[in-house]
Length: 274
Ligand SMILES: C[S@@+](CC[C@H](N)C(=O)[O-])C[C@H]1O[C@@H](n2cnc3c(N)ncnc32)[C@H](O)[C@@H]1O
Image 1 (tube, protein in one colour):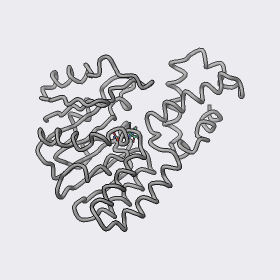
Image 2 (image 1 turned 180 degrees about the horizontal axis):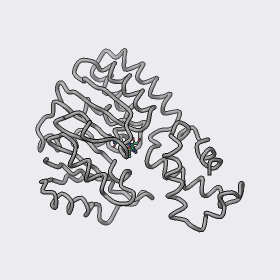
Image 3 (image 1 turned 90 degrees about the vertical axis):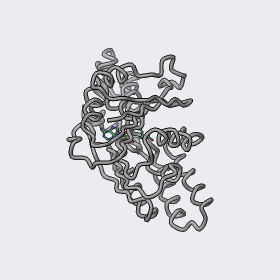
Image 4 (image 1 turned 120 degrees about the horizontal axis):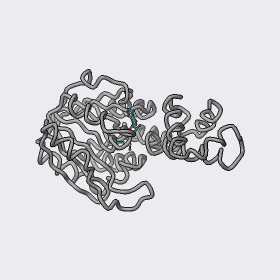
């Protein structure tokens, strides 16, 4: 088991991930493909390689926000950002930063509209907590907000380092802090209070067996509003026939929280009032 985990981690994208996270995805792969179990110890067999490939695919979906080139790219862009002189330059660099991760890249054509619609419902927040944030905090200039306290959390240590550098450069209006978190383990009640909580494309990653974690997050976060989003595409990139997540509609009705749904081409947003 340890050998194959090491092999999975040989790809630079996953080399920094904790052992437990990789093991978790490997277990999931074997649970879903029991016929592959016999290839665990059979190095170089097709089955062995398939286990590695499937585990990496799962890790990529859950944690692999960008490749190593992306990290280098981000540092270079932050360097440029620290020297910008005009608003146009600032926006152009943000565009390039947001192109480095899949979900932020996909949102580029409609980011402004997304925030416009969300804040039309919630009002303009003065504080935001963003869980499983990836690079989303770098969409700040597209939010159309004034001064904001921004608390960003993710399990990916590279993202956190880059985000803290980013916050330092942005200074004044964006009072941001990024920190490592494992949403599977943390006590949500200990997280900072904020006007809105963003959980963009995170519940699908967290809820592998049931929706208990998501429910706990929604109930425990000290926020007036929670915005949870979900992809409307299947893993193979096809449009989902039923993009609404029935479980969250039912759960919110059961716990008595009102919500509105905003739909975009690739993503659906639940705006939940606590
Ligand atoms: C699909 S990406 C979404 C990123 C960002 N919210 C966005 O929509 O642009 C999922 C994110 O959740 C993070 N993540 C996955 N599992 C996590 C966990 N257990 N604790 C904290 N963050 C986690 C990943 O590192 C990744 O950044």
